[in-house]
Length: 135
Length: 183
Image (tube, rainbow over all chains, first blue to last red; front, side):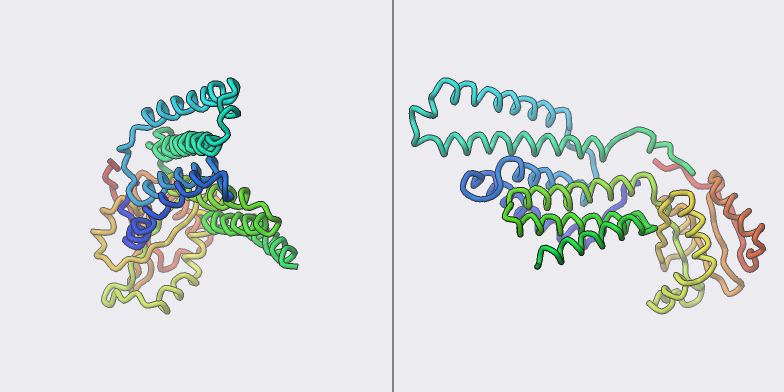
């Protein structure tokens, strides 16, 4: 079932790969100035997982570890506002507001990117009915 | 003004996606639909939504659909050209694509909700038969078509039956071969 893909796809995706990565981080980090933000940038990062799967369909990323990392980042994401926002730390130092927003955007971006990446990898390497399929 | 044009185009592509018989085309039409939706969001001054729609709608979801199609529904038919020349010119390929026999075979699989995909190869027959990617191999000879189907496939039996019942089996010969197990 796993076939070596055509060289057109391989070369084009290989060329675009670093630019997609750059665009993803750009959208995340500039989220509070320009359109975009954690969710959009995270989806762009997740598309890297799919691009990699399209070119190189080998299951060598452990989606369990990704899932664990994603849950850890989710915990940080919940903890951040509780510690920084509700205690009034951000309001006390207005100069650090942009840093706080950027930090939150990065956390959301990593969380969404890993989450969608895990979903995609689980779907792509799903070993269910497909294995013994015959018509 | 531009918005109206984009909305009309979206309607056109949505209808195309619904009415196309090949699922692979429908997926591509849906991707174009999503791209137009992203452009429409941009026109209505919602760039954040445009980014999300562009990435998720036409990127992630399209690739998910394609990988799903790749896993389950595609029935790959290898077509080997006439023995001596093996020249796969454009005219030859479009002639074969328009032929009645191939249209009938495609229709057979489409009715069973499969996605027939014809691949034209210029390889020797044994090579194509041992390739696990081909579910069916058709070889054209001066006498007519020879269809090589794996022994454990019920689809080939039904296909043979269909051709025989319709009396259209003249010049079409069926050969069964033992397929080695996929890894």
